[in-house]
Length: 152
Figure 1 (cartoon, rainbow, N blue to C red):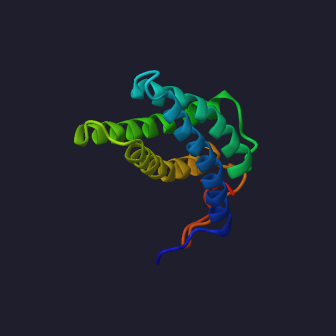
Figure 2 (cartoon, one colour):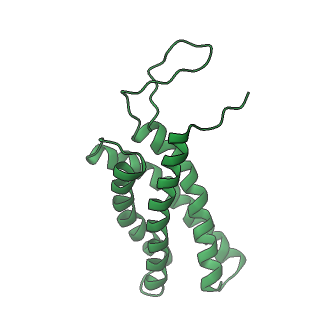
């Protein structure tokens, strides 16, 4: 039997989308502003670092309403972003392989689509690992209580 996510998980995802989407749209605009000033891969790396610091703080405080913080959380979050960076960069490089001089609209569409896909995976990892609230245990039907945490 498939179990649908709990309402707290849906609410956390909605907050994650608003916070992450806002940072993502700002990042997309910054990428356009930096186009030509530096190589695309360098611009994406710079934007990724700055947006990661901002998004991690927002996700911790707003999306997951967690009390966890500090450099450990930022480092764990950075690992998820490294995967997202590789994914978005690969998508942009693939676009430039297929189309030598893509339009800004095509480049942004690929960047935002890749960012959205990577974001869904990032939400799962941040919720289950980085911002997991160890004080809340959940119960798997048919099994005894477990100490695996789920964030609200």
